Length: 214
Length: 164
Image 1 (cartoon, rainbow over the protein chains, first blue to last red):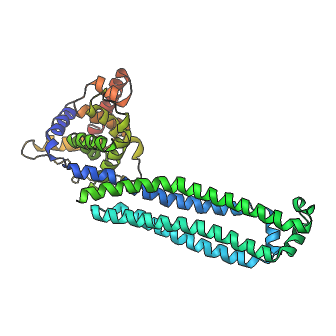
Image 2 (image 1 turned 135 degrees about the vertical axis):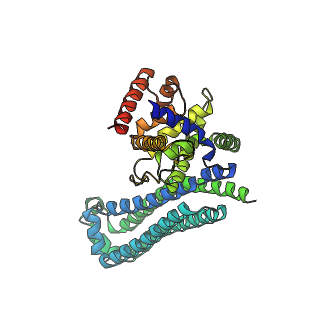
Image 3 (image 1 turned 180 degrees about the vertical axis):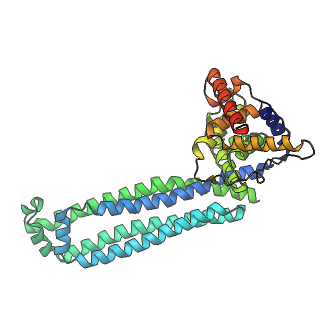
């Protein structure tokens, strides 16, 4: 086929017109992996929000009844709304980060973006762990002062019905404490695994960029 | 260790970057998309680099990974939908070399190639790169016979487009 042969000749004679990237240009592209890391942070934060929301549908009815019975109904709603707002702000910030990092060209701007992202993630993790720990603590302190009412409420549920009042406080708060500890531990582990890996990669990229800037 | 790996990778890619540019040129229609695809290919090459054992030439391995990226990873999402017109084709033909008909034919041919589906395009690309059928079949992971048959069909297809 003549035209194809013609195109082939033309194709090969056009080599020198192709763009020419320098070593540093290409190297920078490798470091731009940062942008995909930041994108992942954004996606994971959304997945997390969806996960927590989905989880809240599975709260057993008994636990909800105790909550309402202790007069915590309204405050739970307020706390939830507040939490969602703050979560949304974080997701917005992650989105901003991923958008910004995608359009940066200069090494310096990229470095600044990486630092920003790391900071946002750090605050996000602190916030989540802090809020979980704090709410567990506050609720349990409240429960402690209202323990008689709690005892009555829990009479309906099987596990606690057989325990006499004197022993109830010790058992209940010990269980709460242990479960809380495990939960926070799991949360820490989760953040360490998921965000920790991404953060380490970002840090490495940052260091490489810093070397390039010198 | 990673440092050395990075250095050898970037230098080899720098040396062979023409291959990637040519793929980008064939698979995208504007400069932005070109750069995007180049970066995507770079990242995919880098990810696959630890598995490159040097039993083939770096460039051969590059053809494979880069084309794979262009075909599979870089689907419609970022590519603009056929907005190119004949004049806008980045492949401008030097007017003094060819007469009008030849030039027109060439442009038509090029635009017909660009309109092929992603896999056919990969075949034509390797053909334009003057690869023989053995190399084409190795790069695309098909048999030599299959490559021949496919190429003949593509030629037939192109002929029909050019001479309706």
